Image (cartoon, rainbow, N blue to C red; front, side, top):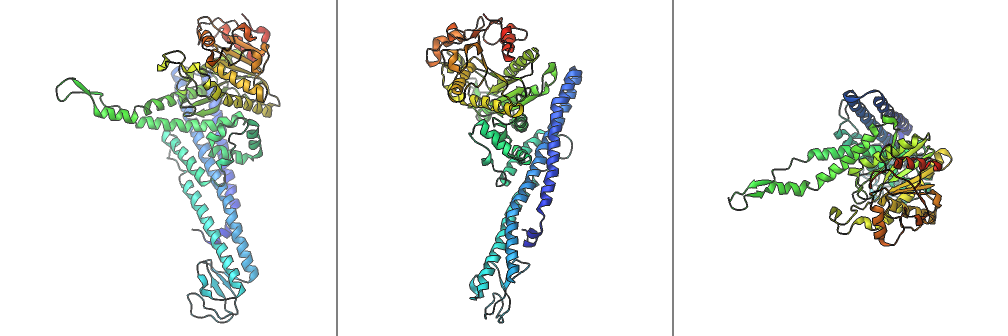
Amino acid sequence: MPTWQQLRDVKLSEYTDAADDWGRISSRSNADKDRVDNGMFARINDTQKGETADRASADVRQLSRNFQYLHTECGLIRTALNGLATELAAPQRKLKQALEEAESAGFTVLPDGRVQYPTRSFVLAPGSGTAEAGAPVPYAPGMGEGVGSADANKGRAEDIAERIAQAVREAAEIDSRYAAALRGLKAEPGLTVSDETLADAAKDTKAMQEAAGKYADDDKIPKGKSPQDNAEWWKSLTQEQRDEYATLYPASVGALDGLPSAVRDDANRMVLAETRAQTQLELNAIPKPPQQYLPNPSGSYPAVITNPAYREWQDKYGDRKPELERIKNGIDAVQGRFDATGKDGLPEAYLLGFDPRTNNGDGRIILANGNPDTADHTAVYVPGTGTEIGGIGGDLERANRLWTASTRQGADVSTIMWFDYDAPRSAYPTDKGDVFPEAARNEYAEKGAPTLHTFMEGTRAAHEAASGSSGHTTLIGHSYGSTLVGEATQAGRIFDGPIADDIVVAGSPGMQANRAADLGISGEHMWAMGAEGDNVPLGGSLVGLGEDWVVPTDPEFGGNVMKTDTHGHSDYWNEGTLSLNNQAKVIVGDYEGVILE
């Protein structure tokens, strides 16, 4: 426990100066991580092939993990030192005020915190027989009425001593809280940041959240606010405060629509790395399943029985292992996109959203090719029925192909794969065991529409902040994703105007609308595709998703029907196809180049 002298003499500026040094290391490590992810990987993909490229990529990936860890841990130390200095300022101020008052009154503060005050009364001093008239009498908290003086100085000394003791107690609590968190910030020796190390970093972050909660409170981060409100909150912070919130609460900061994409990417990559490490550790800890069947010991029918140990394994791990594998597959798909930067010209990737367990377990992954804050043209692709993070790799590849095809038009483009809703799991009767398919119900689109609407608003707000304009935005919906797009755009029309300049749908079963104008745009900016062999538009027109809506490929809808050269429901993004090229033309605003039916 600190003494009042230590609290009085501590130079809080030394803590903040040290925090600045740790902050610089954290920021430098983050910048180095970005150079590794977006520069070194690009060079490897440009210059190396085969086994050499694989070995080099593994080494560079490890280097990225090391910088990620340094960024996190040094950032936590910075936050701890700043928080400690900020919180200690109040009890130190309280102590100094009490000391100044004691001095002005002619009182003496003893080394143990007791306060001596002069009195002209005959008093009984606690712990000592009698006191001479006019002798200084010590008062310490808890001494009670033993002093026995009616002297006015007694009450004043009592108040001063209480305030001194209270200041020391407050400082001791603050010191203990931060010291415990700081003691946990240590790594194993060596240059390899392992899964165990990254998982430990997540624990360190949680411990620092608890320690620094009074200094940087998660409740101060906007919840349920508009992207504009989020952007204003971020703008109101100093750079140091921004760094501290992003380090302490990366999941909360990474989910805020309206913030710069680079900020969200840094925060979400931190969450991704720690989640991947923890997931792998949990998978490693699951033992192999015992033999499922054993010979029947009674020798009677049946000849074999289920092994009780296998049943126990199933009860404990049967559901958990597939869930962990699904999460790992999604993370690996995102990491694969990071590692592909520079391959076939792919730009840096920005992770704008990540949560493996939200949306009824389907998860959340939002990933951009190129920076949407600065691109002239941005396309947001929304996948459909059956989407979940374990199989997100195909949807990420579609966004890659959209970027490549659009960039070939000579434009500055960012394409975003947006998956942040609870997608229906079944598309037709008996699919996934559902007699009545979930995709025939509009509730999934209605529930997800506000989230998509807010994201689109946030994309616009971030672009306006960075570039001074909203840019040109295209919203692309596949299958049930188009139904969600329909709901989200209608919400935009009602409340805030159009959330996209152009809308493209492929294989749409219906958009909860009968005409393009219902989506807040003119028919000339509505584009639909329905390939030969794709029965979803027909199915949607028959089922109607609860109403007799007109499907977008119907001339009555009033939009443009683009020509396709692909077959079936899932090939609209095949490389080198007219179907893909038509979408690219819309994305870059080359409407005359689109080939219509």
